[in-house]
Image (cartoon, rainbow, N blue to C red; front, side, top):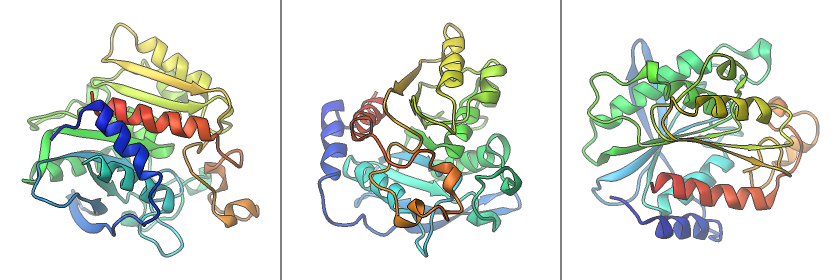
Length: 275
């Protein structure tokens, strides 16, 4: 199933105007070596086959405040559902019984190892599902999850034993410091979205990384939004993020988001997935 680019853009945009909540996700269990990887699945009604997005949460974790999926991720899931996509959220932290991984002393789950393994296990699980359009599985990640996406699409990690590779990849404000020094390139079309005011990730290093990949990589593009900070795609911040006591505060950077950057990112995500 493939929606034309214009239809996909309209579907993603229309989801922002709806007042009802996204449907509840289904929890699925994915075998990944010795780990039982918990994941939340949003799936359109019907038998498919549906294109799928494997979505990777940021350093604050997938859920919070008793919710399996945080509001920002529910919002993206609703947009993608309306565009005809299923969305699979592997819970990299909850599955390992660890909390937020935003501060250096908290980091027990690495983007380049454990989270890349979670992506591969999720893709293998999807390959066994009859409702999946196996040639249209894409990746989207935020911050810590976006860094995992950058590692997962490297040519050195080409999938073995899989009929189809990822269709495309999108990374919101990843950490590019290591990748910019290690000759990063991608084997699938990859889009980076980051704010120029980001004080957590480095737009300069991300641009250097993408520019350095030209000529030896699949299509790679970066968009740097002049007025946007880290987490710019969040429609709003919860009240506890404003009181200085939020344990995941380093994920958020500057308080507030740039609405224009957020709207443009929604359009670019739609265009990139519809390629």
